[in-house]
Length: 192
Image (cartoon, rainbow, N blue to C red; front, side):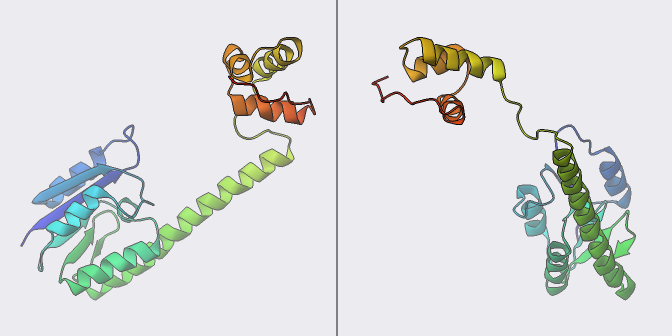
């Protein structure tokens, strides 16, 4: 019977240190690691880890949020493990599905993980809404100097649109957008 470990971080700036230490201490036989968002359900290394599992094996992670971000994902995996006679262990959450209590805690912790993710999302949305209400312009700031230069060239020269955009370091669609916003008459299309 094999013990398969899985580690995940979302970005290359994050480290595997604590996960690696815990999984090595647990005594995994095979270890899979990847840089991928937990929301992504098609993770290459996770799929490899799951494919390596055979009946009687144990699948070990450091913490639930390293495996999935929603209760649905977690419960589907637990059902898959149960159907294939695979044990599941989450070291940090003290979950071991070889026991009834472990299966119960797995379900409860999955619900908490999903709730936490939803609360974070709600806080971010509330923060964005508050910023909008306070007049903060969200998104990429307009490049007023470049746009101004482009409009000036448009009004004072016969240069083609593509050349004006290139000289002003903006895109053609951005130039057209600002011409439309300024209610400026558009030239007839030229061969550019």
